[in-house]
Length: 395
Image (tube, rainbow, N blue to C red; front, side, top):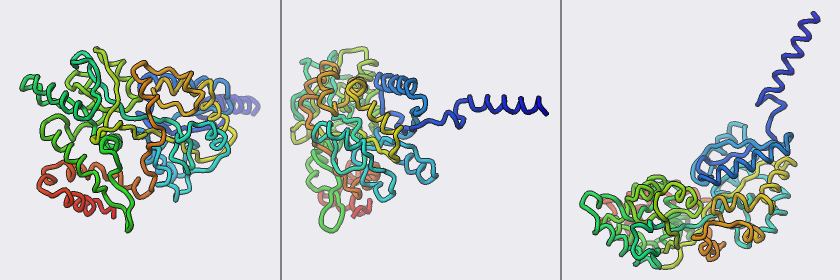
């Protein structure tokens, strides 16, 4: 029996040393969208986690990569319903109220201690979450194809340059849109609302309904579609690829994608302000919040480290995100062409956090044909919104 007992003890010791065994269970599981950290930002963030884990072997952080754009909300809810919720998750900056009834988020002392250092207006406020990634729309231009070599300083100038570029190309090349404007998916709605200068859905007496004041913006975008200057089927990925392949002269994207794009292109890139159709800077904040589901020492230690003056500026600069803490602004050094954008970006232009409006946004893909499809052209502007509200059932 003695040899068997020794073998059993040795076997158990070997099992305990394997990754994923009880002794190696991470202290913090971090649910992170697949595309939340582009290019060099992902490399920097992964290095930060690895360094932290070496220093804190008993409170390690494990990244779980699920979700898209700036949110893992659907994956978070699925894991919550399965009884296996992670300690931290990234959600879109305005999604908090939409899941408040599920009792997922937990108030934590750290959130208050970090929040006092955050730049004013860095969060919509009142959310059980911590501001994390903040970005604004930006217009990129192919400097090798653009003459004069400067980004448009108004919406009419953007239209004229796009139209002139299309007219100067061959018949075959005219099939490509000169302005790569993503309208599909979650980022498409964010980009539309930024350009339109307001939310598509708002709360009024009696319920939620589509915003009639966006009529002029919708008609303007329809004109661009009719002229072949933009395409409704454009996703953020296809728009970026069209710009990289030099099929489009301009790209409407988010500031945090700039480092990845400049790494992939073979031509000089100009970055400038994207304007609304009413000719104002389109500075609608987008990005992610950190949602905390438990209040534990491991979580507090990790987030304190992540938002420290030593670590915070590194991931903020790597991703071209807006600095959340004032002291970061002097340390984070974004690429030269975006420094002016960071200085002029207003930190308080946020999307509404009304939970019913947030839920209505999931119907954006259904609304695209009603706003820009063939049927919409046969309807009066007011009837388009009536049809939209009836079809989406958001009233």
